[in-house]
Length: 250
Ligand SMILES: Nc1ncnc2c1ncn2[C@@H]1O[C@H](COP(=O)(O)OP(=O)(O)OP(=O)(O)O)[C@@H](O)[C@H]1O
Image 1 (cartoon, rainbow, N blue to C red):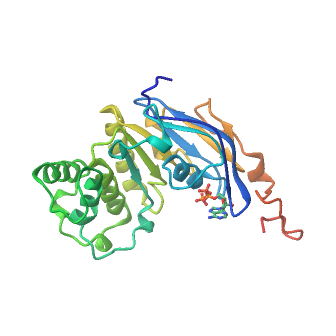
Image 2: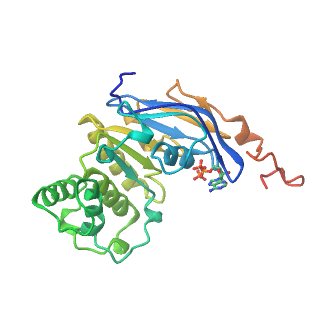
């Protein structure tokens, strides 16, 4: 691990509403790596990436982005965040308007786009193959196209690390393959990737490693294939509450 590598988090403990969600989680992403964050529903994947992005507070541990401790990190343009497309609730905003919000780290809100912004925006939309649809309403696009818009939004700031929350969710198989190809090209161009996935699937060929969470703990950070999560087979809640009849988490 070099001091300037994109991400190094150690010993993270996170509780939400008094419940332990992440326990002693460590994860790092080296320059040029594509790391998958795997795990079953409720294992803590989204909480972890939100913690790494400073959106959820942690009670113990350290997070460093590009060698800078999270509380003092200011170069947010270096980190592109791609949320799930279902999280975007502005269907009438155009492709270009949504992608343009990715330039906010470089300019003040409510200012017109400058020349550099326009160039970066055009390049990002070109890269994801949506330049010809820049005036379309976001809500009129397919799942795969929406995901591409959000990738363009993240790329518009010229990041060095892309953090993605289930980019293949709700995307048909053909588009999954296309998106995986796009992400592979971005990685080849030097972008580091941290990608939440339910399975490696089409992303498998481009992944350097996978980290698997189970019940808020890392159960595998070494091997290319995800380790089995014992809790998946015999569910046990982070809260220790299990329905006595069905055996399913309450
Ligand atoms: N604000 C909150 N307050 C209390 N508990 C929360 C909060 N947010 C998430 N949790 C709990 O934390 C656990 C992990 O949730 P998280 O969304 O991180 O899991 P996940 O692995 O991303 O799941 P999925 O694959 O279903 O999206 C779940 O049990 C969830 O109910």
